[in-house]
Length: 243
Image 1 (cartoon, rainbow, N blue to C red):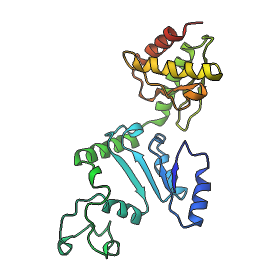
Image 2: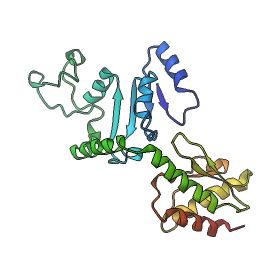
Image 3: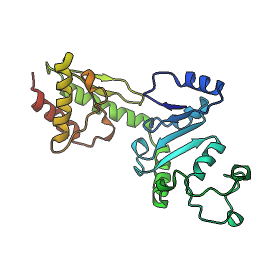
C-alpha cells in the first residue's frame, strides 16, 4: 500500500495499522519530506516497510537519484529488478549480505522491470556526498533564514487588495507564502493566470500551483537565492497592481 507523505488524507498510523492487519507492506513516498533530518528515520520507526526519498529536492544531490530504505528482503527484491544479470546461474554470485539464496531458488532473474532505470556510479557518489552534507546541516539556522525570506516576501506583497497574503505552515521547518485570489471562477482564473504569467516571464518564476483551482498559490523559499525575493515581489506587484 502506497502512502504519500504530506498529501495523503489518512494518517500514516491508520494506513500502517490497516495494511499490516491484512499483511500488506506499506511504502511511504517521502520524496519531498526532507528536511527535517528526523524524517530520515521517522517513517521506519512508525512501522513503514519501505521508504523512498528523492536524491534531489531537500538533499540537493543528483536529481535522477534516490534512496530506498526499509525491510531487507523487500529492498533485495527491488534490487533484483535492477541488476544486469546476463550470466549463468552457476557463475552468479550475489552479495550474501543482500540476497539470500532462497530469493532466487527458481533461477537467476534476467532484466527485471527496473533494468532501464539504472542509477550511474557517478550519481551514487554524488548522492552519498549530498547525504553526508545534509546530515551536517544546521536546521535551526536554515529554518531561521527561510522564515525570514518568507516573511520578507509576505511583507512585500501586503496591501494588495486583490491578494490575501499570509504565511502558511507546511511539513517543513519553515512556512510557505500563501497567495489567495478572490473566490469563485474569477478568482480561480486569476490564480491560474498569475501563475502562467510568472512562469512565462524572464526569469521564469514557478509558484506552487497544486491548489490554484481553489484560488491558492504558494511560494516556497527553499531554493531562493539572494535577490530572488525582491524580483518576486516586484513582478507580482507589476502583474496584479499595488493596491
